[in-house]
Length: 390
Image 1 (tube, helix red, strand yellow):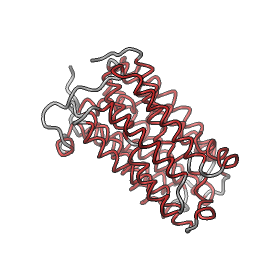
Image 2 (cartoon, helix red, strand yellow):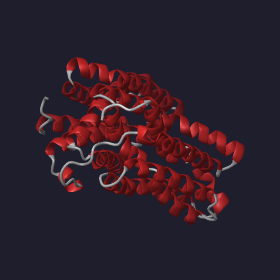
Image 3 (cartoon, one colour):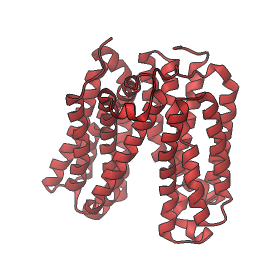
Image 4 (cartoon, helix red, strand yellow):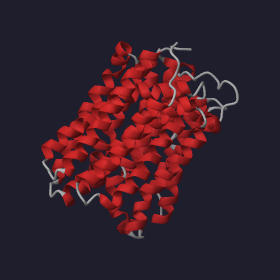
């Protein structure tokens, strides 16, 4: 099954579902510092409001990946959106900070289904070229969430208080669940898993790992740098936060352009070439940032210019790379998508932890650690076997 009635409407709903999952962190972020004043507890416990959501998301990825390989993904998606709405509502009514932390774990768990099921459903709705374009558009929109959702969160916090972001997530999640239910059979489900699928089979599948881990290392390298950049630029280089904003907005703009032309370029030159080329460009951008930092320079305009290829390369390789990871899962789409996202989260978390002691030491240490992850992506692409040409 490669087409469905109103496939772009179905795609829009999947995009909304995945975006709401991301908003669970970014929309709530501005309210976190003030939570101890409202609910009691410490500033350290308030940070667990973010960590608990991420931990719940990781568990949810594995859970929904397993369930999605066994049961109707449409029913699971609707159920997860309803659960996400109910838990978000419960978060708004939390009586204490420890209760909110516990609910946030459940919120992250319940909100992760759309990210797991969307790639396989997109594969079922479109041709290969159409699926790559759809994944590129999804990546473009999702890349805007970390930039725009905190702005909306600040407005909601100022106008309606800390609970407002949870009410918004609850209302939108319920609305998307109802719309998905209304589509019925128009929302496709990937073919059942062929053979005895499992996470273990994916973890020993070198072809799948080629695409999944290279995707994680390229995106992880970028995120490691982004997460450490505000402290690095303001504390180590003496720049203003506006320098980080300029770098981030410029990078996102180039990522959006690249991810939306990645499908056409993959059609013209082949997906394997674009995946390797994009990974190489992204790694070279981080290597250039490292070299620039080693020279002791700290011009915000140069850093912004060198950050462009990091985003450009990710945009070129991201959509075809994710799609071929799903293809390499050999029909085990739900588990395959879940592991790719889990690899990305793990790479980013580990790399950020490694870089944390060095973010105030200058540009070179942070960029070098990020470049190390990104270079691993290229090494994997050159050493592990790819999909056979059909």
